[in-house]
Length: 500
Image (cartoon, rainbow, N blue to C red; front, side, top):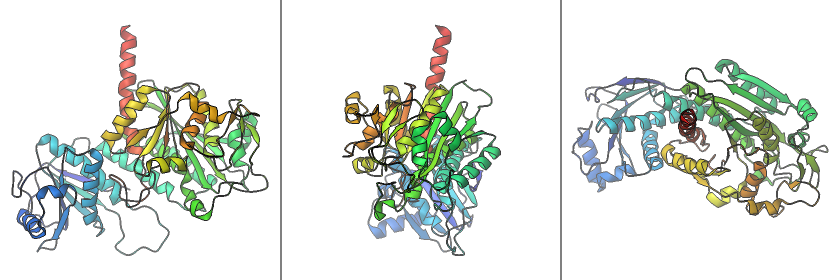
């Protein structure tokens, strides 16, 4: 549950004795300056005492306890910096207040109309996404409680910042699911949670259970699932039909939902198996995007496909040198059982492609090699359309969730040549495995416009951008911005087709 937002068009009244206040203002050269800030003299004294210029507030916010007992924090947002840097500054400032777990926080924004709107959008989102408490299984301290109210001073938005609220809700859902322990979030219980969510959000719900997938010939998904003791793996299909003003266009979201990944017969060592309950993060991000799009009422239909399974080791588990047949008829030589994500995605992408959507986006914590290549500050994207690559990078800048486009040129395919099957699953050397994984997945989308996001930024120590927790929910906010850009492209094409 996100905090309630209360808006006030007037600037903050200094006679108000609030316990927690964040003062946000655009770039300035001196204090006092063009803005009359609350407790301005206190801020000026802090700056002089520490011997730092005011522009340092864009990197390091300051806070002080006032005589009436309130905790005030000041942060300067430099519009010349990237949105990611602006979000990071605001998050650090917000955390100075949220560390005390207040029930209510006040946000005061300054500047001209456009500046105040921009700052308010950033601040409200950062407060929402960091004020909620993620589920943990430990005895809480008495003061460990969620933020209940956000009081915004300086601007009123008639929508109630609906888009920021939708993105925060989607991000919180993705993070909350991702951190659940694996004995609690099994494929069966995960499906139960999704079914309840679908009923509350009025999504159509359909399950392809393992027995049905075997009958259909989904050998890639089934190979991964067969090592589990219980047949609780499934591909879940959710459909959200847009209401008013729909474009008649459909986006397919596909998510890897491996609830725990042992590596199979190619067993992971302990240090790499620890945390593998988060290998379902791609499905959690897809669900978070679906929820955010629903709450924001985006005028587009969404098909969401979730590949939910576990990769266990057992006498029945698939093994190296097996040859399996995917749902699209391709035969696949198994090279490494820890490259299971691309297998469950292969059959899930095939199902998604059969519905002929206008675009497919898939999300997965797919390869360790991409983390080696990029670290955990960016995620990687791969696509079969140049215009999607260009939009992906631009949206990374405008959303604060940064992405890097990587190649899927056809000459990489030579590494996946198999002597005994149509294709290898991967190579034993694992060089450029993130690229080879994308090349592999491309075979299952039928040349539909497609974008694959390898979520190397799903976890980053001390938080990333607007999000202060180690599990970041990366991809939800990027996707909401990206879907809005794609809507513009689709609408332009529809208008052009009418005039031709």
